[in-house]
Each structure stands twice: as C-alpha cells, then as structure tokens.
Figure 1 (tube, rainbow, N blue to C red):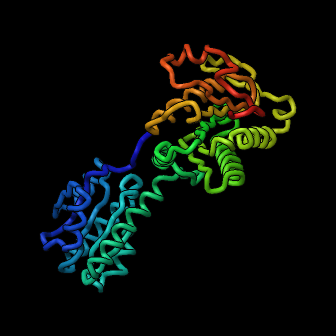
Figure 2: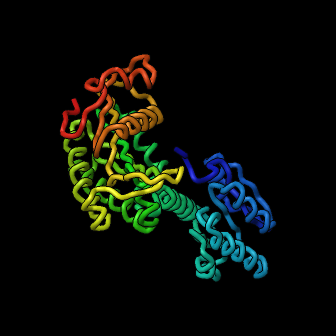
Figure 3: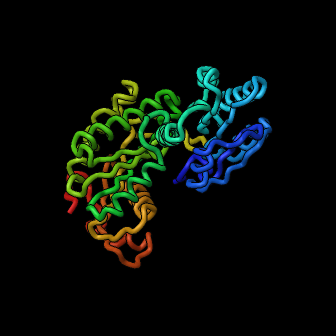
Length: 340
C-alpha cells in the first residue's frame, strides 16, 4: 500500500522576491518542509508535475503584471489532471481576492490577513486535500493511506479487532463480458454492501476502506466477526446474481476465454474474505496486519463459493506454506462459524 499521494517533505514557493509573510516563515519552519522558492512560473509547473509536492504557495502580491503571472500559473496547475490535486494557496492583495479563487486556488489569503487566520486557512486547506485524495473516486470510501492509519490506530490501542480483506472472485471475466461500466456498478454495489452492514452492525466501531479495484478491507471488533461476515456473504450472494443477464443467471455461468483463447465455463461471482485478528497474535505494525490479511484472502479464494476464512494460528515460526497446510480446522473458520 502506498502511504501518500504527495512528496511530504517538499513545498514549492512562487514569489517575485517580496519578503515572505511571517506566518509562512514560521509555518514552514515548524513543518520542516524543504521549501523551494523561485520566480520562474515554468519551474513551478515542472516541479509540480515531476515531484508532486505537499503544497504550492503562490505569492501574487505586487504589481498587476506579476499578479497576473501568479494567477495564470494557478490556473495552469489546476487544469492539469496530475498537478490539479496538489493543494495551492495564493496570497493576493484584497482587491484580487475573488479573482484568485476563480483561478482555481484551493485557498486564498489576503495580504492584510492576521497571522492566526492565515495559518488556520493553510492548515484547513491541507486537511481538505488529505480528505479528498485519501478516498477512492468511484466508491468514496477511504483509500490505502486511511486504511493504514486505521490499522495502526487499532494495533496501538490494544483493542481486540479483526481486519477483513474482501475480494471478488471471477470479477475480471465479468468485466470482460459485460464491460467496465457494469464492472464499476458491481464495485459500487460491493462497497455499499460492506459499508451498510459494517456501519449498521458496528456503528462507529466499524471501518470500511477501498484498497483498489475489487479489493476492500474492513475492520471491526473481534466479537462482531461472525455476525458481520455472515451477513456480508448472505447479502452478497443474494444481490450479485442480479448483475447478470437472465440467461447467465439462470444457468449459473457463462462461457469465457482464458489467456490462451480457450473457452471455459465462468461461474457467477463469489466473494472471498480473509480475516485476521489479534486474539492469538501480537501485532506491532499495521503492515503485519495487512500482509497476513492478504495471505488469508488468497487462502479463502481457494475455497468454493462465497466464504470468509479467519486465521486461527498463533505467533509461531511457521512459513506461509507450512502454516496453511497445518490443518483447516485450526486455520480457518468458514461462514456461519465462531470467531473465538
């Protein structure tokens, strides 16, 4: 999993040489950012495209010509789909305040604003940027960064929890047959199923994130595992067949081609959920949870039908292959089972 969409240590500052506001100097020093100042607008765009900095500060104070250069740079940055996600704060004289917002700036600070307000606006801008870029665009669920933060929080808290990695089976074949539009509808449907069940049964103690594609991760209290996972499987198996044509739904499969071009039967989609808990393991980092959840998801995909499988192993020096072969009743818990 990636941890950030930005170069967290870098900021770009477009200025024509005016004295930097005291609030900006103090904020950059406290943040420990590598601030790269330049009067070359082309250089700002190039750095944003190449390095995707944490933020861009454009100082548009000064004469009309320089202000126009500053706002034109902002417009150019925001028109590009790659650099457009980089948060841009613009400083302008009060008369150009509205114009600066119209240029696409994420936040605008008037030259006469107080240090307290300027700093608050800068922090709020970065908070909004993190929120907007840490969600998956199609499902609006938290992305990989938020997933890692949530797992790290639960590991640090010491609370008993389960991390559940959900993945669709035969989704690629469905996508190839029905097209990406219907494939995207399936992804959004799965996201809604997971969100509604986890939040409905666990409330604020439940978390659902979208890793990408047809991969999701939800974190829930340990005691809620059987109830939540059983309901996820039940609702999924009830709703998913209706995403197929009547003919495919009636026979329960369709003919698709493998990588060699050979026709084979493709069954209707099922859902595999790999579950790991800290009941018998002592996790110290979020990555340990995510790696084991990935392993359990892969194991669940070897089982027939829609299923959830929970890791029952303790912390012990077993290889992945050896541990998976150590006994199904010790390793996994199928749907409608107990989590303890």
